[in-house]
Amino acid sequence: MKKRLLGIALSCFMVSPIVMADKIYSWVDSKGVTQYGETPPKDTPARLLNARTGHSDPATYATEEKDEAVKSKGSTAPAQSAERCETARKNLQVLNTSPRVKTTDKNGENRYMTPEEMQTQVENMEAIIADECANL
Image (tube, rainbow, N blue to C red):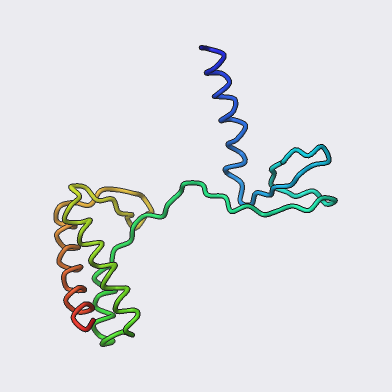
């Protein structure tokens, strides 16, 4: 059991630098073994891989300043209105169904929204839906 656990730990340790790399290349060496690395070899053709780290950006919500700017400019293009409408509907659904919603504060720190902040965002999303979705 200890050997198995040690093997798993070593595997994770060896793979972690590859996951952290910005670009990952794949190529087949002279022995026919597929190799992976951050820099491709000069004498062998390599393929750039689309590495996914599992990182996702935090959800962003419209702020009052953005809402006021849109209202002052008048209506937006139909494609933008449809996109804003759909985003506002999704955000409203999250706000209404989730007891806790994370947000990023001014310092870049993640935190949970207070009930008052959530209520303000619900009102903002309802206003955007009334404005953007009415013309669709």
